Every structure is written in C-alpha cells, then in structure tokens.
Amino acid sequence: MRPLPSRPRNTVLHGDCTRIMPRLAPASVDFILTDPPYLCRYQDRSGRRVANDDNARWLKPASAEMFRLLKPDSLAISFYGWHQADLFIAAWREAGFRLAGHLVFAKPYASSTRFLEHRHEQAYLLAKGDPAVPPAPIGDVLDWRYTGNRLHPTEKPLSILEPLIRTFCPAGGLVLDPFCGSGSTLVAATKHGRDFLGIELEYRHWRTARSQVAEDRAA
View (cartoon, rainbow, N blue to C red):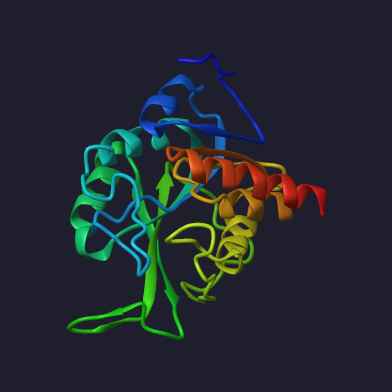
C-alpha cells in the first residue's frame, strides 16, 4: 500500500477505512462524524447501491479504530440503520464508546413506506471518556432538507451536519469521516473553520468528495 503520513490533514484518502485507519496515529482526531452503510441492502429508484451495505464484517473493526483515533474525552456521531441498531450499539460499546445521546432528523416526506412511513434518519452521539458539555447544546431533533441525492445515493444535507460540527468539534479541530461518500461532512467542516480527514472506498465517490472540497475552498 502507498505510504501515508500518520497524521494526514485536509485530505481525502481512497480505500477501505478498516485498512487505512490502523495506519494513522492514535488519539489524533478531535471529532468523528460519519454515515456508514446501514446494513439494509439499500437500492435507490435508479438502482444505485451502497458498498458493503450487505454485510457487517467492517462494523466492529471500524468502530474499534474510530475509538482509537479519537482523542480522550471527545465525541463522535454516527448515523446507523434502525433495524440493525443492536449490531451498531454492540460494536460501539465493544470498542469502548459510551452512548451519550440520540439524534433524530425529521423529514417532511416519507423516504419509504411499509408498516410505517419512514420520515426520519437517526444517529447516536458517542463519548470517549468524559467530554465536556458544550456551552450551547443543540436539540436532539433537527429538520432535514432533501438533497436530491445527486452526488450519492444517501447524500446527507449540509444543514444537519454543520450544527453538529459547530457544537461538538473544537475550533480549529480535526473532523474525521471514515465513510465520507460525496464529502458533505468535509465541506461542512471547512465552512466552520475545522480541518478534515475523509476516507472513501468507492473511487467515484472519492473523486466527488475531492471535487466538492476543492470547489468549496475556491468559492
């Protein structure tokens, strides 16, 4: 594998995060915000899928590495698939995380309908050690804005990511997203004076993330 700095910053790395993260220095990131596969075999209306959404082999090693890379007394936020909540929670707890809060992102539309209309996304706030309480805590229910999913089949809106970064990452800190997709977390970080480190497995999304960050910095 190509050598990389143990503390890369403001870059997007291409590859499997479970292979890349072990090569990074421990306790080197200030905040983690990520949207991993939900383990639901997702397929959108045009047939697009999400890599590794059909298996959980990556979940425990990725969670363990996220915990190792996060600085002591710091926080992480991870989206997750509600129907596989037991797998996600078990992996986070085994890694050493403590559940510190739960976030709901309310949608003005139903993304799918079966027994219920699915009108929200969800994420857990995860603590390593004993983080300080933020001076201005945000609510645990936030409004969702539809992105159109133009750049990625499960693209998250900047409007929900920005307040999370402002609240939970110190000024000038480093935000890690090991499943960075089209780069929304990275763009949100730069907009609020934080550094970023993204990792993306799929080549087309890696290229998109790099382009999105470059465009935002040039604006």
